[in-house]
Image 1: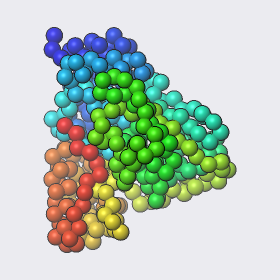
Image 2: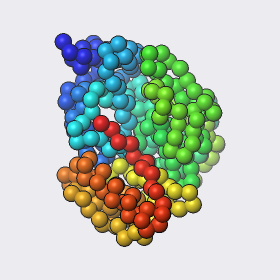
Image 3: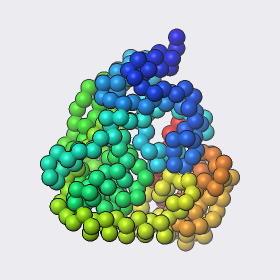
Length: 302
């Protein structure tokens, strides 16, 4: 029995749903990506620890994937196992009147709605960001001048050796689209956010305003991975791309959105290679026109 088959059996024995050679195009908002050796839906912490320990001893790579909204998966797929946190990892509870404990597998939208229902303000900026809570913590997701680190108190994770641990405050090393998890190899399992008391109706109005602004400005009707590039200091990537005359530029099925130049959309049948070529063209053209080097925000996965 090879390593992948052995890990598959461990995961199945732990009660997980396991899919072999699962196309990642089914699990990413870009709708792009070849097959993963294994796709494992993990339902609780015991199963996750079993899988992490087994993968470590077998030398099989593990890739936690949230909502698949900020990634570009290779056409060749993913070697190793992709982990989707389900079940217990999607629970959201109040720890005290202003503190929420949230599983990493919950959607950011679900967390925002939970906060609104409990009349807690501070997360309105995140309404409409199409990611998971774990992914949002990993990337320190943000919008409308807000970011998760503004309200994030702590994170809990499973280490590479299958132990549970946590990071508090500065230990999370939060910065613009950065966190300690981008280098420590741990799998985020839950987060704690602290908000402020507010008015549920007013919070809802602010959320609606932010969402309507997204709908007006962003190509939400087409598959994409969100903003492709990080914001350069004092500038906007989308504006630089538009000024470079690149709106509507297309490589294969990948196109610079006509609605918002900071987005690349899948017009149908786009490949990872199409997107990478278009990104390269954008970066070179923008640098030639403005002298600014655009840095990718979306994560390539292979």
